[in-house]
Length: 237
Image (cartoon, rainbow, N blue to C red; front, side, top):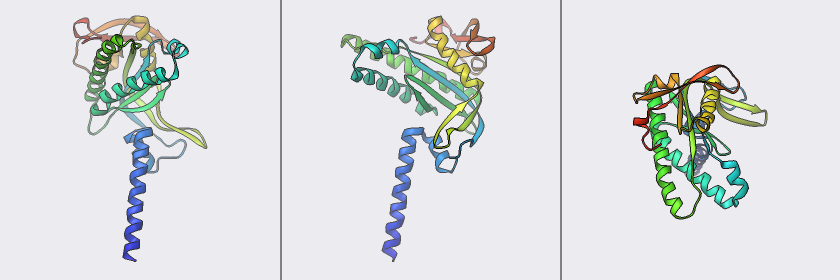
């Protein structure tokens, strides 16, 4: 009987470990913990404060139309890997891969105030851009396509939780702050900058910033203030 109980206990622990590993891989550590804790019903959500990252590859559509699938996957995986390596140690969590785009959240809570979360997000963006720039030098010598991407950064309240159909859910963040991060990333192409951020985000960091004016954003009624790192502090952008 004792042996059977130990066997059952070991099997439960193994299944728990497997479940945690799979959830961490597919939805991220924080989100996986929420799911395991029972936050699994459609509509289960909470309002959280966060620094938000939205990034997107440049010219990816034309590249994917003209290159073999193996080259497309190699580029995507290299980009995703380097961004993950920059954001994860700084407390960021990749919530979604949307084609060639990434939605990442740096939660603000008991262990991280708004300034710390925003500084972490900006530092991660700078590191990822620098690492990719170095890799591009090697890729150029090997005749491989360059990886170019933009990052939009914002901060604010978001709804964090489950949305979807009764039989197919997605755990994500939603709200105006997420929309603005996405719109800021779209402007990186128009303004020729690798990183853009909101006024709210700029107030939380201690690097020199440049105001790039008020810009219209799709779906947003009023023009929004847009900032970037100053030319003297662009660090390889």
